[in-house]
Image (cartoon, rainbow, N blue to C red; front, top):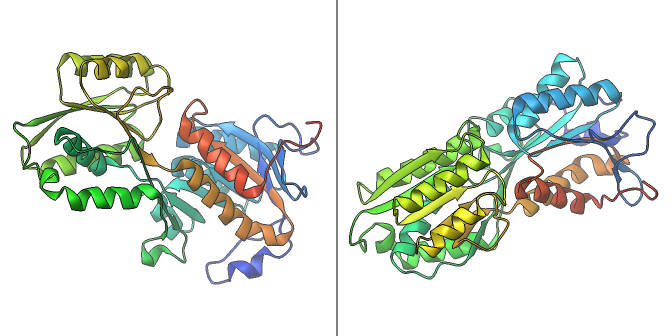
Length: 355
């Protein structure tokens, strides 16, 4: 059993002797073998569930895990809303002492949850909204932009909140900084011969992180004082609607298309159509299932998952292992798979022999 942690007690004093549990929705009773385990068997994934990025689903899946497993020491959720849903389920069930780790680190969401003690850590997933408009401006100015711009993360714990999180940089951070310095005039819109028309298809604006991306895009457009016009669409979590939206933007002959896909494959024909019509396609967050894009811009999900795994190892690894519940995002999307892969890599998790 685990002990409830007070903010006044050093974490290291409470870790001694605590086990680590990683749980999976496909698991059965607590007596069944784990779904994933570390090489020495000390770290065990016993429950994994696809909660499709939603808080209410995260809560429901955690309720299932709590009903089936008496000892859960940590929940790793692929975003902060699902982590918060899991934390609410544990709180309502009176299950103290479980640690919660999420991803996104929006100031009003994950960062605040850490400050309030609801989450133990959250990892920044950059929205890349302002950066997307900058990339559109650079492409319009004829600047050679790297095909893949992958940005870093920040680790927010109660110890790092005051400093704005501990940075974990990625190569794309330096590349983007160099582009911004070298092409400052283009990023002010001074090289535009006419108003730049940017089309945007967001997969689901109801998600808080995506709403923040939209806000970051609009804020950057507003800074350009009419030099950029934004045609913004919301697919409302429907891949087929999103495909049609991209085709509509092609028909409208916008100058650049930004798209944050719901899934990888469905919109590929629409992206291909855009390229065939000479319209650059900037893909945000989730990758396409093909090379039919001009620039991919997003966070390093494998590195974020790896950083989360390193945090879990530091928090629980010294205690001899234990139990973790993994609540995943939409498993047909690249971020969910990559956040799992990085986490599993950091902890050395594998399917047990004969499992």
